[in-house]
Image 1 (cartoon, helix red, strand yellow):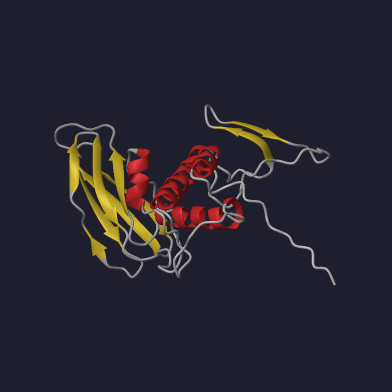
Image 2: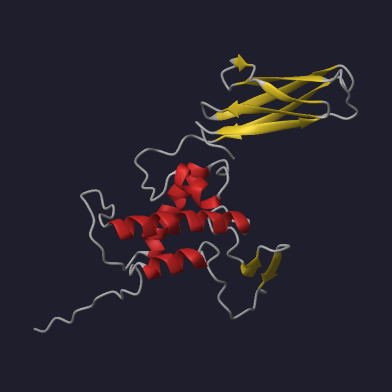
Length: 221
């Protein structure tokens, strides 16, 4: 699901098609405002960039003339933009650089969710210098948290998790050909946290951000 402010490449495949086939796209916002993004392509494949400026249900209407003439409608549900107050250790540009590809739709929301998971789980007992907002101040830590955040989102994408732990009921998940193992009701084993990206843990550990046990003190009367 894209966030408000995201752009998405949308495509249409027309069959049959030939040199007379022409496709046009009308993008209608939740408030009824319609725009006509530029469409590129020829014959059987056409594409356009849809810019979702607000949250809500957007309607896409492809109108094809010539061979394969017809109209095709679809709806895209757009989530509200991630609040600016949410901490994020990486930007969508950082994620694009990490992936070597365009970031997935909803990337800003996923990065903020990954950052919150890091704060509440992976970095919960970590000790490192921060500024007044709680953000790291040392360059090595900033880079490690950025990369770990991106690695976490990549892990979620590869394993079909949305960052909410939807795969927690599975005892194993593999990306290649997607093999899932599920423990039975009487299983004594504890399923691993599907949100925990091994590469993210490795990156944080390499930067000295893991391995700090909670400190306890015993008071004597």
